[in-house]
Image 1 (cartoon, rainbow, N blue to C red):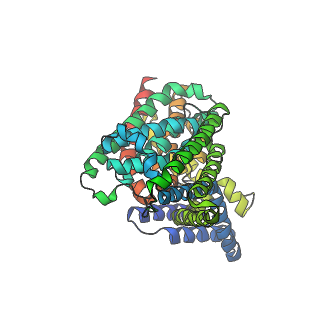
Image 2: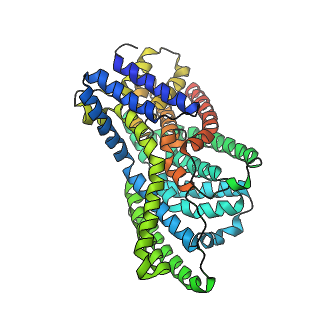
Image 3: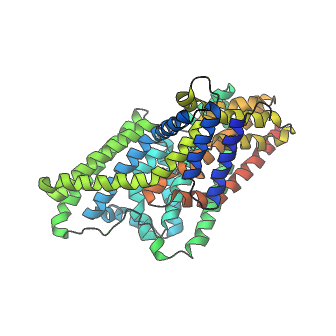
Amino acid sequence: MLGLTTVHWIYLLFSILIFVALVRKREIVLVGIAGILAVVLVYTGSPVTAFQALCSSIVAGFSEVLYIFIGIALILTMTLAMKECGVDQALSRPLDRIRTGPGRTFLISGVIMFVVSLLIWPSPAVALMGAFFIPLAQKAGLPAIYMAVALNLFGHGAALSGDFFIQGVPAVAAESAGYTSSDLMPYLVPLWITMTVITIGMSFLLMKLDVRHMKKEDTVSGKNSHECRMISSDETGKKRRIFFLVMGLLLMFDIVVVVTCDVSGDDALTLITGTVLVISGILCLLFFGMSRAASKFIGFMTKGFGSAMEMFAPAVIIIAFFSIGNQETAQQILGEDVSGILSDLVHALVSGLHVPELCLPVVQSMAGILYSMDGSGFAGLTVIGEIAQSYHVSGECAKILTSLGQIVIIWVGGGTVIPWAVIPVSAICGVSPRELAKKNLIPVACGLVGTIVGAVILMAAV
């Protein structure tokens, strides 16, 4: 591990402590704060700078999830308004015909999430579709946690790891290795199929076994659910029809814009979030009138932001800690001369291990997991191809390793098993991010093992 300093070892130590605490179901916020202070104090030798960096890193960490936070908060605002007006249950009635039980609902919800995520990426997709699936899952008896699992694995896992429509993810990974995304496809597709089939298949089996033992009250209701304020059907029938028409037109407008104008990622999320805000306002005006609409809207928004912050606040501290390991963020906080701690650890791992060629998929996967710890995954995509090239293997093997690295980084950090990466889905479904990551861990681990084996077979065949 030549070239690593005390700062690197301290960072690695606190990273391990955070994951150990997660496994043991202990709170990790104080560990993250201590880690930031220790890393900066050892690097600069200044307590003043350490305290300043603590605040700066939290700001940097929160800025990374700001769009998602606001989006989730406003979606929860709309969900609360829909529940009080009693339109959430009516919204799911057209889907009742295709619902036969938890298993089928799991798959149908997941497939729809997969398709929409291919078009606009998962975070905007869960923002757009999440509120519609919740009442459907509740009627089907699908537990809240498994609705979250379906949306997460099909969206942030399967759809984003392939990204076959927008091709932003494979383009970044391929560029880092000096290739184009089309160069990776012959190897990316079979590895993606292996990962997706094993992970989702294992998750489905675990869901079928688990749902038999879960109590009825665990079905999707969400942390933010409360007793609906039901008004007489004569009074609300016309208002509901008007609301559904307006909401349908606005969401259809969003879909048309996204598909025809090549809008994705944060741009799609801001478009949907703005639309949701308008829908919430229209809903309040229709059901509460001019005299009460403003006060009711503020009440829903306050609860929505409060629920979102309850989810995001602990995660922001951990994101802040792992942001310190990212070179770009570290340079903003500690100065231009600081190196990337995470990249240094990965390069030390790669250069320090001398293994047979067919063992390189294991090393590449370890590098991908290290780069996934910040919970975004995308930072690692910019270098994973460069790491594959550093093994000095043939061009075809480098393509296989780059494809494998892309899949590992997205499934782990993009993400399905990092608790602070699954917050968008957990917030919509009203479940704990830690519990969602725990449910995903065994299926994703099995998928990774199968995909690594698949990469070894491909490398042996080329």
